[in-house]
Length: 217
Figure 1 (cartoon, rainbow, N blue to C red):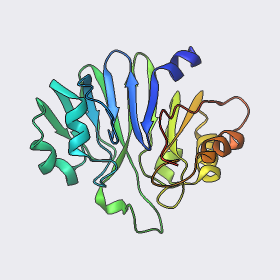
Figure 2 (tube, rainbow, N blue to C red):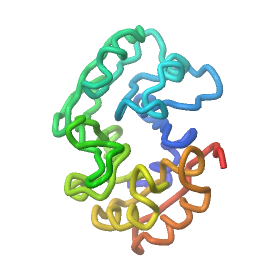
Figure 3 (cartoon, rainbow, N blue to C red):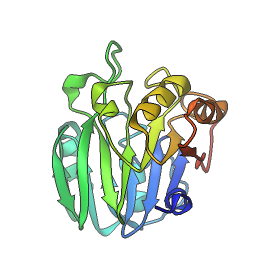
Figure 4 (spheres, rainbow, N blue to C red):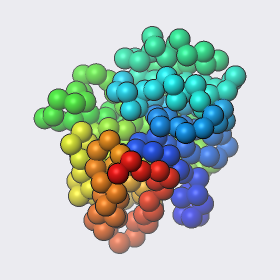
């Protein structure tokens, strides 16, 4: 697999707002989008928090035939956004959308109150163009995260509400993807240095790039 092509397919627009371009253009948790894009084939939402489920930013990236996938907790509000098709997904569920395969992975904090497991919030395993992308969402070190097998892992490194850089590196080392990209830092939480700390903690053989386009710190 061409690792540089994998990296080129991914942009972290801001914080934890991700754009993956391949057979389709996929956004995960669009937030802080600076311009009207209207290029999303598929939008994936991980959970309810304002920096992940932002109706304003969804409207900036969606087009007439965009498909939206959300956990049950955001389903009612998501239905009001005018997307042509919407689906609800739960941890462990597999869904085929627009010819792409999605699997929801539980995303939660064991022992912290910010993302309770019982909320049913998720990360996503997205298969597109023969590559498996793991977008972890807001999670800590969990058994579900460590069971993932993927080509590229996008993992939160900012700490407080998720794994910090060192903890994220430990999980990704256990997963052993070909490549990794840090997310969820250098804006609302975490510093710009967290991406570098994450990279330094990865085992030899796991390629890593920072793909953050804009920071707030």
